Image (cartoon, rainbow, N blue to C red; front, side, top):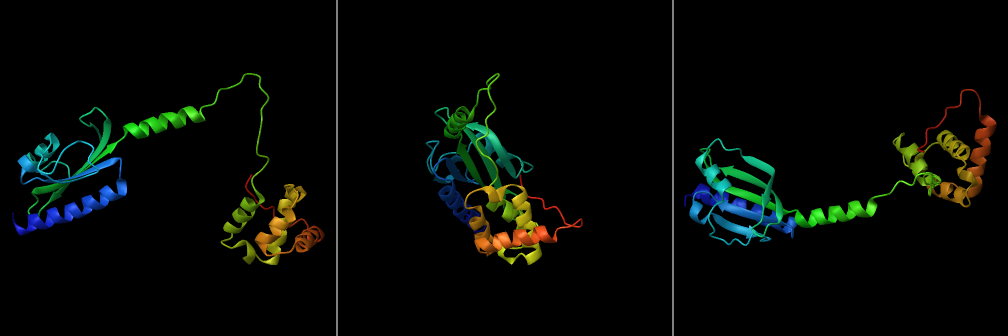
Amino acid sequence: MNDERTRLLKEAEKIGRALAETLAPLCEVVVHDLADPDHSVVFIGNNLSGREVGTPATELGLARIADPDFPDVLANYANRFPDGRPAKSTSIGLRDSSGRYVAAICLNLDVSYLQCVSAYIDALTRVTPQAGAVRETLVRREPVETKILDFSAKRNRDPRALDRGEKRTLIRALAADGELEVRGAAERIGAMLGLSRSNVYYYLKGAGAESGPDDIHVETSR
């Protein structure tokens, strides 16, 4: 085994081990030595296919060995484990300095479990239209905190960093939305803006007293 091939295989195995740890337990990661197709598997993590180190190359590996124009990466193609479970596979070829394939890292994701979970979630979230039923809304409005954060984000500020005019404008808009009619809202608004409850109403009164034709309407999330 020449030095370059040894180095590439060592690096490929390092990457393969990291991927296997990250994607455990549903993704099998295999590193192949394409210079030795009869014993190509040099690493296998999260073994889902029942292969072992020293197992021969697959048909795809042999095709890559035989064809220098074979794609470097084949991503997300359909595959199947020996027991019939469906898999989603990706194969990455590694070339030496001469452009010859010498190694491959292959990922085989067991999608059978994920398909079951997906079907369960689909069934759990499915709703049945009720003809003639009364339309029901469970949430009255977005939380006042969300409106304050949206207002501040549009000005690239923290809510407490808004200036007096901006706080007046915001509190006025919240009042127009009926937010101050909710019990405890003044305290919640004040906590986010760095104001006391009485300051919130002071700002609201000041906004009302100073309002005029040039006042700017504030967009808050609805």
